[in-house]
Image: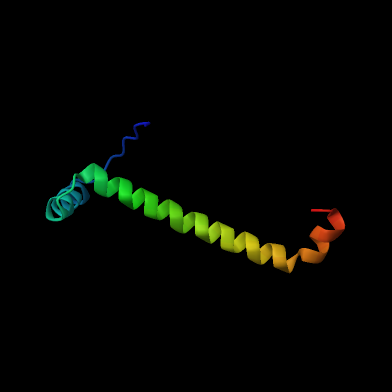
Length: 66
């Protein structure tokens, strides 16, 4: 696994530590979960937009052989 280092303001770092403690997890586990959730949302949004564009431009895509 690759390592990623991010800087957080002290207030956010403390909030993350408190949340992790309350959930019985490490701050790193909470941050990883948040990144994964963000990536899923973005991936789903991009796929939805691509689907809308494909429908909207279907005749052009057909003419182009795509």
